[in-house]
Image 1 (cartoon, rainbow, N blue to C red):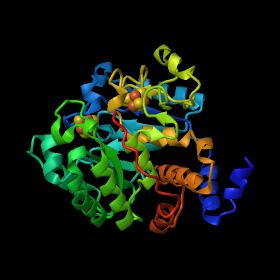
Image 2 (tube, rainbow, N blue to C red):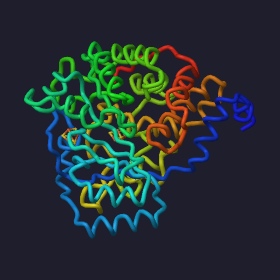
Image 3 (cartoon, rainbow, N blue to C red):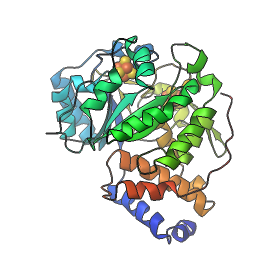
Image 4 (cartoon, rainbow, N blue to C red):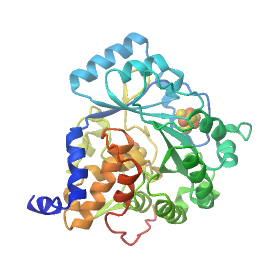
Length: 363
Ligand code: SF4
Ligand code: SF4
C-alpha cells in the first residue's frame, strides 16, 4: 500500500479519497418498491424478464424487511421497480431508515418535503421524439413532463440511456437537461426486446462513447460519467477481465444459483441482494433473472465492478486517478459525500487520469 500513500500525496486525490473514506463503507441492496409502473417502455428489463410476477408485499412486509435489513447492516438501498413514485408513503419509510438512490421516470414529482436529500435518477432514452416513441408509442411528451417536474431540482440527475444508433441525439438531450438545472449520468441501452437496427447493442457503442466524451469536455461540471467509466462500460474491459456474469460484483449472495459465481475467486459485493417487490424473495441480480449478461451495460453494476477493483488500478498514479475519479462520481451522484464545491469539483475530477485507447469488445 506504499504506492497508495505516494499517490495520496497529491492534494486533489487525497481530498477525494478522504471524502469517500469518511462516507464509510457502503452495504447496499436493491429493492423493487412496487411491481407497478405507469409506463411500458420498449426493452424495459423489469417487464421483459417478468420480474413483476413476484407480486407486491404489504405494508407489514415492508416493515419487516426494513427491520431485517437494518439488522443485517444494510445502509444503502437502490430503489427501483416498477415506478417508485407511485408509492411515496413506502418510499418515505425507506428514506427514514437508509441512504437511498431512487430511479424514476419523472412523471410524478417526488416532493422536496420529507425527501430533501434524496438522489433521484430520472430516466430518459433520447430526444422527446425518441423517448416518446420507445416509451409511450409516440403519444406523450414524457421528457417535457419530467423536465417540468424537476426544473432546478438539485436532487435530480438525468439517467440518460443511449442506444448505439442514437449518438447524434446526445448533445440536444444533454443541453436540455443542463438548461433545466440538472446533471447527467449516462447509461447504455440493452435491446432486450430484439428490435435491432440502431437499438441493437451488438453494433457497439463506439459512436455513443465518443459523443459522451465530447459532452464531458463541453460540460465537465454537469456530467457525472467519467471518461474512464465510459470506456470501461462500452468496451466491456477492465484490465484482464471481460464484463459478464463471472466477474459481475452485484449478484444476490443469498441465492444458491450464485454460489458458483462467488466461489470462482473474483471479488464480489458480499452484502448485496436484489429484492423483488414482495419484500422477501431475491433474484439473480438487480437487472435480471435469466437474461444474457452480454446484453448488460447497466451503469450501476459497472460502478460496482470498478469500485471493487482498486488494487488493479495501483500501477500508476494516472490509473489510480481513473479509479478514484469514477468512484467519487458514484458517491457524489448518490449524495454519499457532501462536497459543496459542486461543478468545480466535477471539473477537477474530469481532468484526472488518462484516456486509454479504446478497445471495442465484440460482445
Ligand atoms: S419507466 Fe422504468 S420500470 Fe417503467 S416500464 Fe419504463 S423502464 Fe420499465
Ligand atoms: S445481467 Fe448484468 S448485473 Fe446481472 S448478473 Fe449479468 S452482468 Fe451482472
